[in-house]
Image 1 (cartoon, helix red, strand yellow):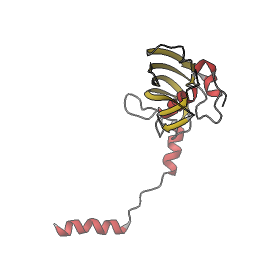
Image 2: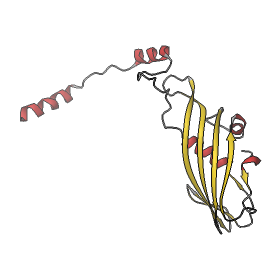
Image 3: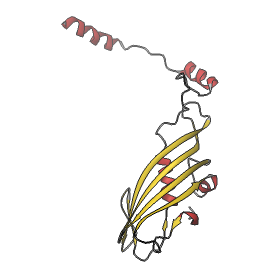
Image 4: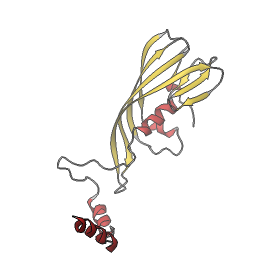
Length: 174
């Protein structure tokens, strides 16, 4: 992965206190990451940085849309995403990830690259199962031809006779 300079925040020159930054993530951003699940999208990123003596707290807000593939019908669609994440960056002796949201960087650093974290947060904002949204009536907006094919190949529900025997036990007791 190549580092993307416009997502570097030079924190050394900043005074203690709160600072705000805004970024636009688009197709060229996702091109920098090999094997990215997302290739196309537009996400507005607002970063509120609280700088302290030996620590920085980044509150990262994401709003936008990304092109994803539906897990049901395999057609692409734009997924609207909105998410807030927090990243804590401490100054220490060497690079270290203390936890999923706490990073330690060397005291000699003067800037911090947010691009890998923005990339990760965009992906974390996606649901586990990506499906076309339903319309106003509650009907799927997936490809109707693919839905028909799926229904044709769906397994038929055959009742196991052992379950029927267990159901009868309940009525026999009462």
